[in-house]
Length: 116
Image 1 (cartoon, rainbow, N blue to C red):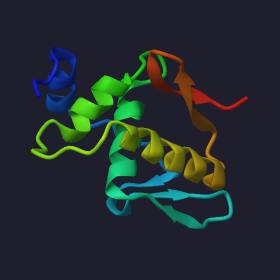
Image 2 (tube, rainbow, N blue to C red):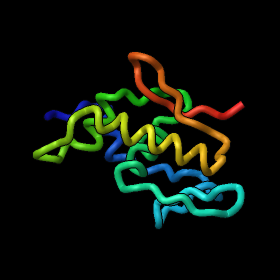
Image 3 (cartoon, rainbow, N blue to C red):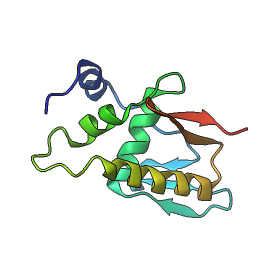
């Protein structure tokens, strides 16, 4: 699998950190309004970080997520795996009560938006 130019640039640029106090980077956790820590798996955390890095003005396509997550993997999982992980990420963000969510854009991909 060949990685696209945009994804290659994204891998090389410094990682934007998810905003504190909502996230605890060293442990891949979100902090709920009540202070409870909600753990993300490695895959979930990477998906959240990729979508966050794309920002609110850029959509992370399913293909780009797949490339960024599994480009180096000799035996990558089925593409549906990303949707399963995204479902879990969304549920954990809802549980934490963070002021943003991941929105799907049919046929285009995903991006972070502020909750209303």
